[in-house]
Image (cartoon, rainbow, N blue to C red):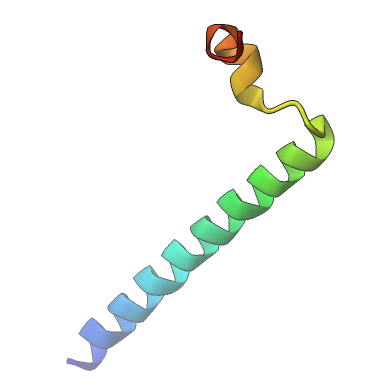
Length: 48
């Protein structure tokens, strides 16, 4: 049971780290592009 708890804790920490990395990446992208979202570059038809 101890090993099972440790494995769950490690998986939980890894998922949290991945979520933090994604959030930081999105914030950095928004800060670099400014008001222009990446959706406008990939899908310009939606913003016409």
